[in-house]
Amino acid sequence: MAKVHFVGAGPGEPELITFKGYQLLKSADCVIYAGSLVNPELLNYCSSDCQLFNSATMNLTEIIDEMERGVKANKEVVRLQTGDFSIYGSIREQIEELKKRKIEFTCTPGVSSFLGAASSLGVEYTVPEISQSVIITRMAGRTPVPERESLRSFAQHQTSMVIFLSIQGIERVVEELLAGGYQMKTPVAVIYKATWPEEKKIYGTLENITKKIEETDITKTALIMVGDFLGNEFYYSKLYDASFAHEYRNEKSDE
Image (cartoon, rainbow, N blue to C red; front, side, top):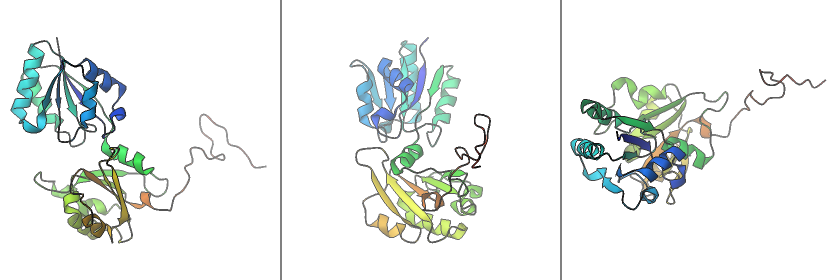
């Protein structure tokens, strides 16, 4: 019996899809892709007779109907979603509808844009003694955010933060972060379309990032990265410290 295969497309660069995701695309009979976000070059991996549907023009019922038609015709259906679908991927509602119709599915993870962004910047979110936690969140918009998850409340931790879907409200984002406890000099990086050819990187601090963004044409498809992990202060980890013994390495003495 054919199935629906949810596949994370990666952050944008076509080669950053997983090998398993690539194989599923290559063998798919039908692909429903998020056209407003997925790099169209990924569709070049599909066969010439594969049916392609852009979900940007479809509602949820239409998407599920097309999945059902494909599976009933014994076609392997790929639902190609941007980044990794576990973060702001709207996968839950699709899975619940498939379950109602008793349609089998698989899930193949992808590389999230917040990981692609860190790679593009050459940074580590979890710098020893600086930050050991990462908060992934968004500002409330047409989709509300629970009050207990407000930017202001998260900012109290002053840890590494990645803010999705909020660049259009950068001024409000900065206000909330400052009100929550971050300092004006806290480093900020905004990365537009991480790993795409048209990628842009804007560096600053909470003091000046709003002005810098206002001077660009960036209004969507960008991540806001905030925290001292972007700063110049850092400490080496214990993992490779010669004086730190663990299961695989004995302590080395200077004597």
